[in-house]
Structure formats: structure tokens, C-alpha cells
Length: 176
Image (cartoon, rainbow, N blue to C red):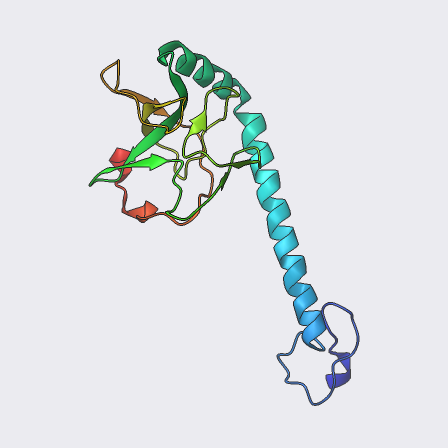
């Protein structure tokens, strides 16, 4: 019965000295299996992002037009704030020593805001309603005072964002 067991990567028979629960013949096959899993996960994430981009192209166009119409002339970007129950957390969020972040299109950006020109759609971790604020075009990129009272916009999709300073599940359903 032991002769029927083989490595899941290279399909070579497993040595009799191996445990019955062994899946791989050695460290190389185990590392190759891990690399294959990571590659498959990265491909799945890219396909998910492409699906979101295609499904929401119309929403991006409408949102871009609304932003450009309500933005002050000195605005170079925008941020979206999510009410966590205690305070507003602004996206995109970058950790203290983080030099860049990934955009929805898979490019790198060194800015702590979504750009207006060229338009960058928001990457947010939760399908919810967000408060919009504009950021100055010229460095240092200060937030601009709100011309309109508070402008809120519902984002119809969610993107996995890096580590957040709060738990997404802790946000009440009625705040989403």
C-alpha cells in the first residue's frame, strides 16, 4: 500500500521512511509547491482586480466627473474617510515608514492620496459610504478646507488593503 503514495509535485514515489501524511519527497518539492500556491494566489488577485475595474468603469466615470466639478482649483487629489465608530480613518492609508502604495491599476504611488489628474479610482477595504476631502496639489500636500458641508459617496466595491489600525468587522453594519 505504501508504494502507491507519491509526491504531489514531481510524482516520484515517496520513500518508505516518510510519514504516511507526507505530501512531498523533499524540501525542493515543498518549496516549489509553496511557490506555485503563491503564484496562483497572485494571479487570482489580479483577475479579481480586473473584474472589479471592468464592472465599475461607468461608476468611475461618474465619480470622476463629480470630483472634478466639486474640487477647488488648487486640489491635486482626494481622500476618502471611513467612520469606524470612534473616528474617521482616511484612505489611502500608508504606514509611517511606507514609501509607496499600490493603486487599483497595480502601479506604485508615493502619494498619501488618490490623484485627480490622471484620475485614480479609490482602493478601499469595505463597500461603504465614505466622506470625501480634497488634498492640495503642491507639496506638502495639506488637506483643503471643505467648501461644501460634508460630501459623502458610497463606493460599490472593496479591495483588500494592507494592515489597518482597526478591525473591519468592528464597524457596525449601519455605518457601512
